[in-house]
Structure formats: structure tokens, C-alpha cells
Length: 427
Image (cartoon, helix red, strand yellow):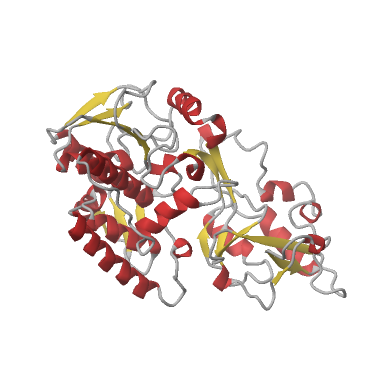
């Protein structure tokens, strides 16, 4: 059986390498550190948690909590390492970051079927290859990917607006309408009075910003954060993303400003705030954007993001099994595949490894089904609208049939379904 190449020893690459080795498959794992350090890394260990020591909630009625339980059933190394290195954090899963990475590094180095190659990969190797180089993929490899899949399918930073659960929007205040009634009334509109707008404006321009790292400065000239636009003048937003023209609820209404929300998924359970790309901290986004009329109780499934993040436009590039449409020998895993978050990245590493294993053993591809969080995430990556595609984390908004009050029931069903699938397919 041939050796599988894996590029990158982050969470996704580590998961993929150890899963394949457990299946008796030889792995050649390429990692450029310590020969070349990435701008966000601090050690030479594999599976380094760069930004936070929290892996979010453990409760299964939380989307990320459910995803953690699903990958644990599939033999996840990050879940194993978490159990050995966890620190008190209530219902959240937090770990000692250094010990967490050391644990996974030792597991990989002690696995005889894994050959570690310390070098920066500049040209893609021959044979089946899983690329798991993360959001800060090196410049040389990025250029090779551009050549392979086309430059228009590769993005270099996230400038995505917050996404809100529709059920949490006050539809007694927000109303459907398109500007000047052109086309379908597919936007939800939140109208401000002058007093409401002035309060929102003051809080927005004085809100706390998330600090940018050195390598992230200068990426957003063509896509200004809403708070930067606002600082150009009190009326700037009213002539831009909050323009009220053509958006009266009735003939007698005359809104001072209007925030629009656009449907973000097929089922209509998620809406994004149009033009609200932002660099506010998550806590400030929640506080300030809840000042928008109709969003007082808004539940955010994804906050706005503005940071460097190389990722493929997955719906146009990837098959459901995470292989490239232009070259099925190459699989993309981790944040490069169009998911957001540590656990989500790890999950795609396992999925890519499962698909490679089944291919090498002559078995059929696995459909994880949207009855599971893994399947819902894969469905989003493969089938989302490629226009304006942005990375997504696990959330019940992409989980068909999920409602505010049935998350626990849906999670229990997902776990039962995945257990049956694991047994039936010997995963």
C-alpha cells in the first residue's frame, strides 16, 4: 500500500496522520518548523493551539460540544490529548496548551508508520496528499495552489459579517423588503429612528477592537470595517451600508437609517448583517449590534471576522470527500478547507483520512449525513453558495431541522446515528 503525504502538522494534519497510521497506512508528514517558523507559532510542537486555550463547550446541546463528541467517537487525538491535559473551566474544554501539544507530538513521533520530514514543501509531492497547512499557508505553496485551482478560488483574508439566528430576530420590528421593492423582498430590514442611530453610532465608534497581529496589518484596504467607515463622519453609514432610501416599511414611515440582513443558508434559519465586516471584539459585537432595532436578543452563530486567513472557495473547489475537483489525489483539510475553528479543523483532518483510507482499501465513500454535525459541516463546505463564501464553524444553523428548543434531542440523534455508521462501516 502506498505512502500518504500530509503537509502540515497542525490539528488537522496530526489527526489525519494518526488516523491513517492506526489503519496500517504509512504516512510521510511534512512540517516546516523548526526550519522555518510561521508568524503565529511559538514552539516546535505539533498541533499547537495558537490563539486560545479554550476548545469551547463540552455540552452536546452546544454545536461545538456535539462536534467534539462526534470526533471522539472517531478516535480523535485532540480529544484524547484534552483528557490528559485539561484544566478547570466549568462546562468548557480548556487545556494546558504546552502540554496538549507535547502530548500529540509524542504520539506522532512514537508512531512507527509515520515518517516526519522537516522541510517546507514548495511543490506538491507525487501520490495521494492531504494539505493541512492552515490559514497561514506559506507563500510558495499558496502560489502552487493558485496555479492548480485558479487564483479566483483562493482567498487571503476573512472579511465576513456576523451571522444571526433568524429565530432570535424580533420580526415585530424587522420587516421584509427589497430596496424600492425591486425583485423579491428577500432582505430583513431594521429601521432606526434618529435617536436610536445616534446611540448606535456613539457606541460603535468607541467600541473595543480586537488587536491585529503584525502579519495581518494592511490586508483590508479594499474592505473597510464598519467601525472605520463610521469614524469618517456621523452620516457616513447612512450613505453607505445603513442607507435608508427605498426601504420604508409603509408609505408613512421615514426611517433615519436601516440595517439590512440577508438570508445566509438554504433553509432560511440564518441571516447575515450586510456590510458589517468588523474588527470589534466578539463581546463588543454582541453588545453594540444588539442596539440595532429588532436585534436586541440576537443570537450570533458567527461573529464578524477580519484577519488573514488563506482558504479555498470550497464549493467551487472541493468534492464532498474533501478532494480537489481538479485533482482527486489531493485532499484539503483544516482551515484551508473553508471551516473555522480548532475542533472543526481537527474534524476535517479525520474526515480526509477516513476518505483516503477507504479509497486505498477499495471501499465506497462515506456519506456522514446532515443528521450529524460533521455531515452538516461537510454539506456546507461542499454546497454553500460560492459567491461570498466564507469559512464556517459548527453551529445549529447549518443543521437541518434544528430549532432553539430541540438542540439536545437533535444532538442525541446525531450521536446515535454516528455510532450506527461507525459500526456498519467499521470506521
